[in-house]
Structure formats: structure tokens, C-alpha cells
Length: 383
Image (cartoon, rainbow, N blue to C red; front, side, top):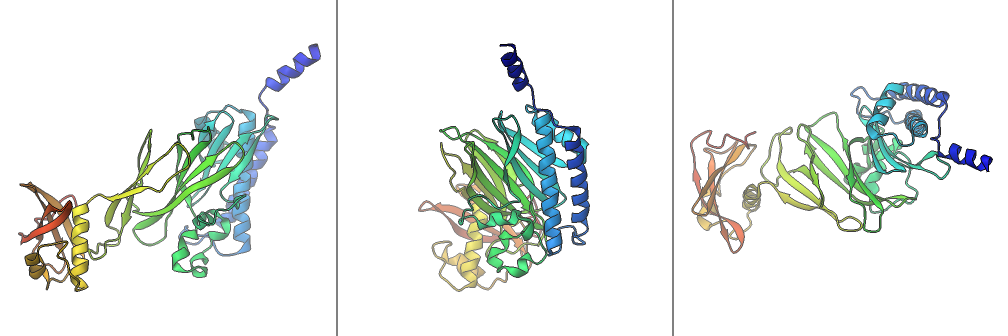
């Protein structure tokens, strides 16, 4: 009886990792990080395309993974904030973490422009084990989401885009984690989470972002949805979260209204609403639908296609000979008797243009255009 009591007490104690586990993992991480540094390009955004660079990245993440396991085994109930601090103190590793449940912890590790995500689950023996690593191939790859390859060390090389057609460049890394997002559980109890990541290029004012939504059922982490979006590097992507889902901001190109390379183009809102199970594509809408209307109008005009469904015929006649180059500014001037006034200025315009936009047949329609004094369009939409 005494023996059973002693065994029960021992089983109830947290599993203590040996000090050497932390020290060894920290040393391995530093060595691997140094090896990765020897292969990083001069701009710091890619690694050279070589087996040695891939091996160094793999070793770096393996050491980071082992160190987090050691910290979790030392204190199985550790709070995410404390885990982040201890990893920083033990090895200088930059982490973020959140608990999906008392036995499961989601962790992202970043080193410069390179990152990965681990999911650790506490097994019946009391030890934490990695159940998922984004830098390793998925146990069951989803052919609908080839862009998840961008997390693989082999895709972080400088020749990745040279090897793939332009349409597949989203499969190239490296990616760094911007945010881990805890989502509501599914109705059956499975955990859901999202990973927002970024790939910053050495040139250009726009960065590529990846958002993926995942399910953890206690055994396997599986992707439910993945999308690629772009945003100006100075503007935030994550806009907020509520009980029903979360919202992102994105940036797209206009068809005819050109903007400077580092300026915001067509501002978009991506809304992800979560059902009781799974995930569904986002609802996407423009921040400035009237500006979209003018963009479509000029696209038709330059292609010499009919635009009567977008604008009144006098508007088409008045702007038929206009040359449109770089847009320099735009702003809303207000609303008068149900008519919304949108001011647009661009290189090539003699004077800023004010579009008078009304609702006709349930759709926006350009009823008139007038010309304004210089700088009338200067304001919140200026470039």
C-alpha cells in the first residue's frame, strides 16, 4: 500500500528535465544559428541554395524544438509568457506561444527573416513531444495548399524563384511568423488556430503574407484553409478578432490607376467568419468601392469598350481623350443630395477630376464629372 502511494506521488510530480538538456539544446541552437549565418545572403532575406544551408536551417529548428521540449518538461504547466522569457534567457531564442489546451502548446520560433511553428502535446508518460513542425513535411500533405511548402528550408534558397514559374512563387520562402491566432474550438471539441506569416523581399514596398487555418484533434494537426495576400510593408495586416472570427487588411493593384511602388493601392478587407466546424474562404471587399468604380471605368475607356453601365455618356465623351499616368491623390469630398463626390488627381490630368457618383439600379454609377482647382484632392488618400 505504501509503495502504491509513493508511486502515485511520484507520478503526480512534474517531469524535471536535466540541466544538460537545456544547456545542450542552447549550445546546439547557437552553433546552428552561426552556421545559418554563414549562408545568408548579403541582404539577409534568403540563404544560398546549397545542401549545407538547408542542413543548417534544419539543425537550427531541431535545436529550438528540443530546447522548448526541455522547458516544457521542466514545468508542464508553464504559462506562455514565462516560456517565451525562459527561451530567451536560456538561448536567446525569440518565441511566441499560446496554449490550445492544458496539454497542448503552439510555439513559433523566429530568427531574422526565418521562422517556423511547432505544436507540442503532453503524452501519457508526462513528457511533451512535438506533434507538428511547419519546417518539416506534413504527415498528410494537402495538394490544395502547395504554398505551405514555403516553410521548408529547401524553399528558402535564393534560386527558388528561378526554379519555379511566376505563378508558383508563393511556394518560396523564407517565412517569418507575424502572429499566432487562437480560434474557437469546433463543435466536436477539436482545437483551431491560425498562423499569419510574412515574406519580406529585399526590394519593393509590398510584402507577401500567408494566412493558414488549422485543426488539432488531439492526434494530428491538419490545414483547413490557406490564402496568400499582399500588404504595404508599413501597414499592418492583422486588423482584429472577435467571437465570430478575425479580419485582415490587404493591398491589391488597380487595373488602370497606377500608384507608386511603396504606396498603398487598392485597400481591401478580408473577413474570416468561422462556422461550427472547418473553415471557409474569406469575404473580401474594398475599402473604397467608388474608387474601384472609377478604376473599372478608365479600364473600359482605355480598351475602347462600352461603359454605359458605369457612367453617363457625357462623362465618357468628356474623358475620352484623357491620359492617365501615376495617381497622385484622391479623397472623398462628401455627399450632396444622394450624390457622393470623389476627387482624383494623377500625372497626366490637366486638373483634378471630381466624380459625381449615385446609386442606379442598386449599383454605383458615375452621373457626372467636373474639374477642380489644383490640390483639391490632397488629403487622406494622397500619395
